[in-house]
Image (cartoon, rainbow, N blue to C red; front, side, top):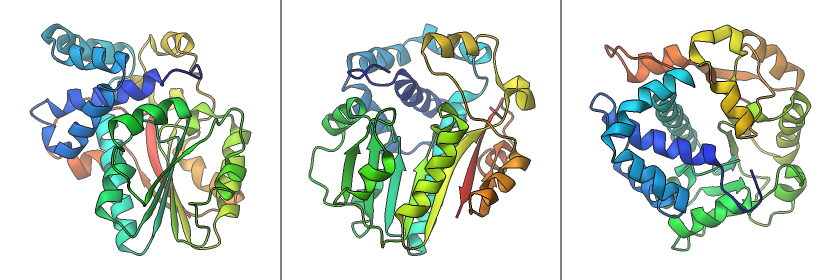
Amino acid sequence: MRDDRVSSTALTVLQGILYTSEREKFKHLVSKEIIEACRAILLSTDEGKKRLKQLDSRVFKAFVPIIEKLMLPGITLHYVLRKKAIEEYVRDSISKGFTQVVSLGAGFDSLAYRLSKEFDSVNFIEIDHSATQIHKREALVKEELSNLNLLSVDFAKENLKDKLKNFENFDKDRETIFISEGVLMYLPRESVEELFNSLKELVDSKMEFIFTFIEPMRENRDSYGILLNLYLKFKSENLFWSIKKDELSPFLKNLNYEMVELIDTDKFKERYLKNIDVTMHRGEVIAIAK
């Protein structure tokens, strides 16, 4: 991503959520508040406005399943289920006493913004590139929310641990949930390990880390279309880190973490899609570690 441009992938996720929210079988999975936030953010950029206009086109909607089949079958529904599961876990953690939520590479996700208005005693911090945050501020964070803080970090050039440690609105003594959604696959393994180590050192109280990871493509070949690699090269978004589900627990143990839970496609179906026959993406999994 160029320094002055928002992520095309971030816009695609919003478009996918809105597309799914209009499908009769799945519209119950997307709240009115999420729809409003997605639309507001898309309206804040010229490219986003084009994406919204596409959603009004019957031709575009007819082509989405074909595009998905060629790229990532079931991915638009996956975006919705991924975010729903993460939100449910964060809400549950807040009910158990966690008072700080830090989202790493938050993109255009609206979770922290929406929950900050609901839980005024919880400290929310979003960390991302300034190009993304500028549009997010314009679209969503129009009123002053004392418990919602946006920290600009260029992950390619700046040290996350130092930036967060020196951020006046970060409290190392609060019980903290870190979130990394759709980010770790773009980092080399050594950077992933460094991130895990940094988070442990940042907090002096209880902490949990909810993150997504991808399995090697060979593990779920049906979840990757023939044009995916070409698309990633065109967008300069190479995938670096992947790991099999049964290898994650030992990986975490070596970093002094304990696996709490895995939420994969089968759990998505059990929780949200009982008796609904649909193509689902199986390449990405949610994990919770402490």
